[in-house]
Image (tube, rainbow, N blue to C red):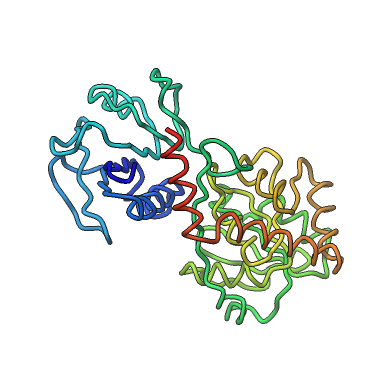
Length: 311
């Protein structure tokens, strides 16, 4: 298997905040520890652009194109198996195809879907999710307190309005601090009153906020990996998510934390983590799960190699 070329075909390679782009880059990095790697991504056919350790070859603009110099017996890792990508792989008779997600059911039943979350079993790849543990040493400079409830709201369609879940928390626990992160800004609330705002400019800014929170409520976790949930758990911060949040709900099921369906369940989960014993137990379980499953590049390489050899 190691003698064969691995092609990482990524629709999202050039999208900085894309979770699938992060996954594709992680798979490409791991594949270099196994054998030769080629990366295909959106761009003019026949062009190559340097991107870190890789020379990324363009897939084409109007129609996707398979490079002539790539072997026909390679293994193809696809982040997003769209119909045009599936047609292309059929045309070049690629048999060993593994994909993260697809918006349709592939006609070729020999192609396999990769799992990024869940218990050990066929198709599971443990993506390495790095964090900088220096974030645990110093709180975010914009706030003079720790132990708050951190709400990751993503992009708020209601503009300046407080997300309903954050409003419930700050109203129910009026004597406690709540920090809401959305659209690159962290706002501090107490008793439904806005205390101040600071910019979240870097990943380190976010890690500091996550590392010093009592609980992290992620309202918009990534569908495929829920990267921010894993990062929080790596810092030992318990996570609370909606019950229907897919990968994030699997994380809290396997690694501690809570999932909620309604305001009562959300507030109950936050209240439980105000208890020192409950919070300590949830923190230890979250840290162990995230570190063991997503805290090592070697685990990523080993799990990817296992999936490739199983084919």
